[in-house]
Structures are given as structure tokens and as C-alpha cells.
Length: 128
Image 1 (cartoon, rainbow, N blue to C red):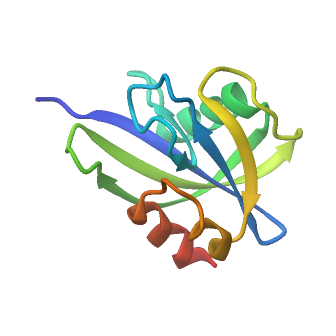
Image 2 (image 1 turned 30 degrees about the vertical axis):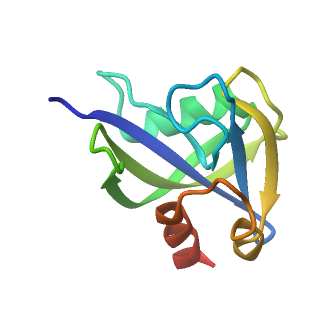
Image 3 (image 1 turned 60 degrees about the vertical axis):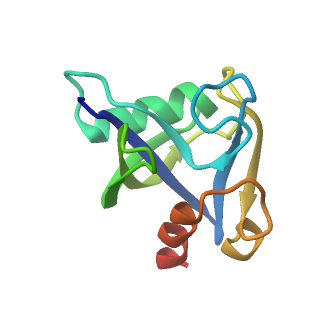
């Protein structure tokens, strides 16, 4: 079975990270608090994918800074490629049906969000 390639955007501003609460209608992780994520298209680089997904989901223009890590989802159906990005322009706002809510949170505040993947918390803790 071929794995789906997914990017995750780590967006930091003033010591807080941008997370979205996934729409309950979503097949993958409904209702979970997550970084902005999306599928990488076939002819797209990871850097292009992360910039496109952030723009589509919240309207921010970002520049990929560096790849932080990658790992498989719990069910092994996807591989998530984590990218630290820098905001170039815009204000974050919900632009499609991916999320029902956005929040800027510290790592300590992330620990209080539910549901939240503990694997994601490890990535954010490494940056705090």
C-alpha cells in the first residue's frame, strides 16, 4: 500500500504556535487540534506543498525555513513531513472547511487541548 505524503506547517509567532481544530466532517482526525496539514501533490516539492496548504487554509503567505522531522501516522497510511515556516504576509483566518477554529497557543497551552496527538506535542516541545 502506497503511503500518502502529508506536510505539517509549524508556524510560530511571539512564542505561540498556530493550530487548527479539524472539522468534525473530516475523515482524518476529526475534531483534533493539529498544525496546518495537507497532502503533497505529485509534482510538488514539500516546500511548495507547505506554502500552498497554509495559503489555502488560513491565507498566510509563508516561507519554508527548514524540515524538522518526518514520521508515519499511527495507522501507517500516511507519512507526515514537518516544516518550520516563517510568515511573510497576512493574518490567519479560516479560509475553507478544514478547520472550525484557529488558535495561537504556547506549548503549555497545547497540553490542555483535547483531543491532541501526543506525537505532535513532541515536535513542538523540541522547538520551545
